[in-house]
Each structure stands twice: as structure tokens, then as C-alpha cells.
Length: 324
Ligand code: PMV
Image (cartoon, rainbow, N blue to C red; front, top):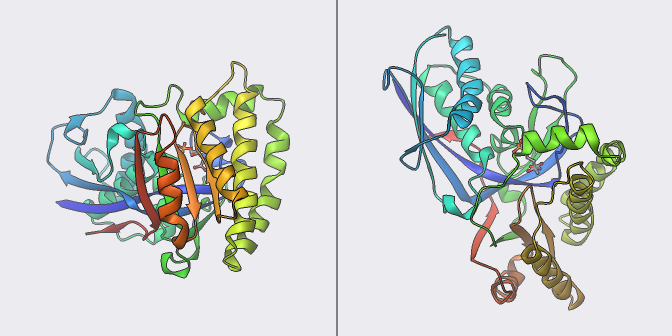
């Protein structure tokens, strides 16, 4: 009647920004990410725990919009289980400070997919759990898997082949991720709204999508060679081109703040001193800095000195989602 799952956030090195089908979160291009130990969501789903669907995050009921999004995952799982109208109580807790603007929908929707399937008695292969998680948030399909993960866009209109694929497990390579938190509010425009606006109005959008295959090839080769320098080259390029495409949206989507740019400059200073590190950022102002393990302390201490930095969180490649 009840199941608990843990899932971790992921950070994309080759970014996802654009859907072919916004209802099913079917992406217009592939993306590649690392699942992060250190940023965890733990979710319990209980059958018969409420008279209608309820979703609590860290003890508070979520907004109707957030519940609607989660219900895409819950409804799809209920349809598979043949329990169409059974209400579910979902209780979710983030291990990382939720107020830090890192309450990733990826870990949340991945944990929700695994816990809902578990509570309904479904035994699904990870690919199918990944397609379920994708319905709640595209990037969540990657958090079902640990380590280095590719999201293949797939070609079936029903999305059944649009899911994550593990390229390498977490223990394959252990670069560190220094998460530099500068903002504690949720982003003003959600990713799904934002990417729809970009696709409709940015003159750069086609060029952005056309770069994805080359970025994916280069990122895969860099990971296969455990080459942080060339991975950084492609990851920074993918990140900045995504943000350029966002900024070219009408009205503009500007997620990076002056603090974000100060951190990017700080990473470039470290690179100039020969420190193996690179930056990336998603649809928000917080910056994630990848570095070799031996550079982690130096990177964290330099980042901590930059005005506007509120908090530093240490992460590294982690495991996929699982029932506990
Ligand atoms: O999964 P969503 O809808 O939150 O979109 C995520 C988009 C980015 O985080 C900006 C990029 C990515 O690939 O994760």
C-alpha cells in the first residue's frame, strides 16, 4: 500500500531546451547529464492515504499547478496498473535546502515515478520508469539512471522510446561538482513555459538544436577518455549557447544574474591558473562547477569569496533512482 523511493538531481552537460511535443515532454534534441550524489529527494507514495490526490513537499501542500504536473506521472502509472481512480498521498522530502532554488524537479519526478510504480505493485524496467518520470519533467527521465546518462529523444509519437540510457555508472569517473548557490527564490518562468517561448520566438533556436549532435558526440568522447578539459569545452559551450538562445527569446528569458557572471569569471580565473574546472548553469542563476577531485577545496574556497554567494554544496556522480 506504500512505497518509498530515493532519486537524485542531475546536471546536464549537453542541455535540453526545446520540445517537439510539450504535452509528453518529447525533446527536439538529445541531452547528456550526470546524476548527482548530494542532492536527493525521498518520496513516499501511499494508497488509500487520502480521499483525493495530495502532494506534500517538506511538509507543505504544493500549488495546484505543481500537483497537476505530478499527476501526469501518477495518472500514467495508474493507467498501467489498472487502478485509474485510486487517490494517492505523496510525501516528498529534499535532502538539500529547498529554499536554495535547487529543488530540482528532476529528482522529485524521478522519485515520484519509482515510488508510485512501487505503491501500485508495478514492476517496470528502468526505461519505462524513465518515460514515466519524463511526463512530469523532461530532465527527470535522466535521474532514473546513475552516473553519466544520455537522453535519446526517440522517434515514436507516444514517447515510449524517449528515455534515459546509462552511458557509464557513477563509479566510472569521479569529478567533483561544487554547487555555488546565489539565489534562494524559485525561478520566475518555469523551464517548460520558457522552452516553449524560446521555440516560438528565438531566431537562434534552430541553430541551437542543430548543434546538439556534435555536442553529444564530443561530450561522449570526452567522458570515454575521462578528459575534464575537453568535457569542459563542450559543456560550457552548450550552457552558454542555451543561455544565448534563452536571452534571444521575446520577451527575453534571462536566468543568469550579476552574481552568476561573477562566478563564471571566477572559474575563468582559475582556468587561467591551470586549475582543471568548468562551469555550467540551468534555468536559474546558480552555477555548478565541475573540477578534478584534487582541485575541489581550492575551487570551493575561491567561489566562497565571491560577493553574492550564499552557500556551497558539494556533489559528485551518484546512483540512479531506487525503492528503499
Ligand atoms: O526538465 P525541465 O522541464 O525542468 O527542463 C530542464 C532544462 C534545463 O535544466 C535548463 C536543461 C537540462 O537539460 O536539464
